[in-house]
Image 1: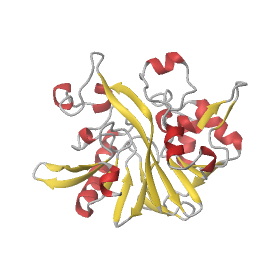
Image 2: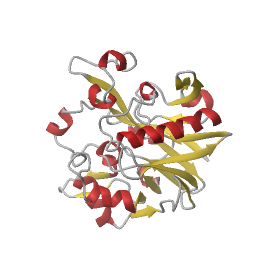
Image 3: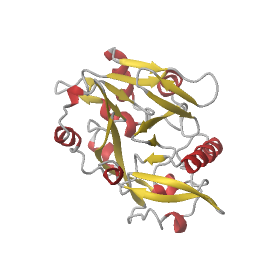
Image 4: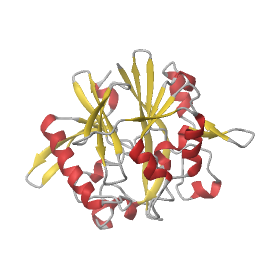
Length: 286
């Protein structure tokens, strides 16, 4: 197995929404805001080369939305994905599987592209796209709070393509093993129903792809829960459980949205779980 971090570009989000009830005077120490109260974010995927499979975890927000839509998020560096793939010796047609942690537009928007004739089609023509049935049902019947994040043009074309499949959800607990993808999955429900966090054993380390359970290192203190989460108290419990395990077992946490930091570890302190160390991917895995 080989792992490669791959960028889909940067964007910005409202700092208040990203930190919920935490006051700006506190969160801006780690995530400074611009004059419009927007903080820097990124969309960082993990590419997994495993035998004859090439698995892409999340696909960023894509580029098919309107200029008005993108004006809210100030995207930049949006054309790096194919260039990075080529530098690694791959083409998007080589990707066999696309694993979507959840179907919010900034995690799955790059899964679908707009054809020059105007219709939508999968961005990876040879790939199987993975979700789970409980989250899929949640996304296609969105609640008013999340409706703006579940865009039909990102979802319906996947179903119509015949390339969509579902991983099994656990009968009990929050962790299961996907034999199709050859990694474990942690299921969490605070941010959205049945968000999936891949867990990969790699070169003696356990790497957990944190998606929106931990957007940036600035979100490590347990109460720093996003305003976007549908069940914030459940997120709090999930973070406490998973962060404690991460600190006990020295997991490497892969950060999808932190524009400056790719990996981090956690430690126990008298104030609770806190940041331990920060790493670039190639600092650990040459």
